[in-house]
Amino acid sequence: MNYDIHVGAIAGLTGKVIAFLASLVSASLPVTGFIIWFDRERRKRGRNKRNKSRKKAQNTNGQRKNNKLKSKELEKCDSHESDKLAL
Image (cartoon, rainbow, N blue to C red; front, side, top):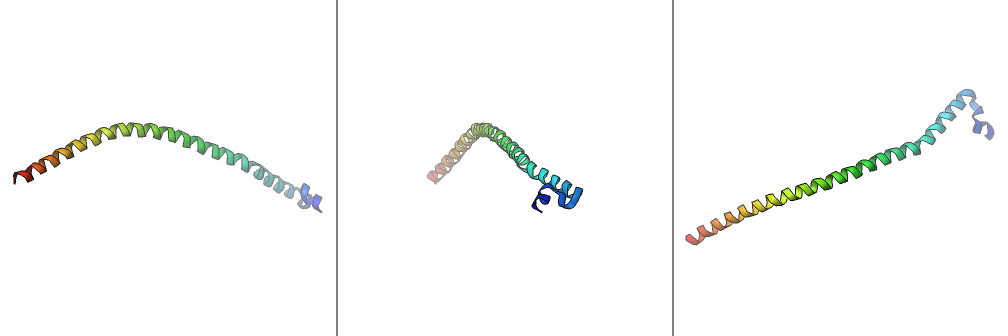
């Protein structure tokens, strides 16, 4: 009986077709899983490289903006202190 199940003879041609399809799916799952994982890793690496270059660009622009904001804030503070001293 085990031999009949093993070769798919228990249900005739239909059993053989079902056994073939089941084994085909079972054999393809690791291959498709690796392909999906590899593609995801490749995208992630590309995304990290782009983000690093964007962060560098943003940091240089951000530092310039922060310096301008700080100088404006200091000017405001200085003007408020001089108003208090005049009173």
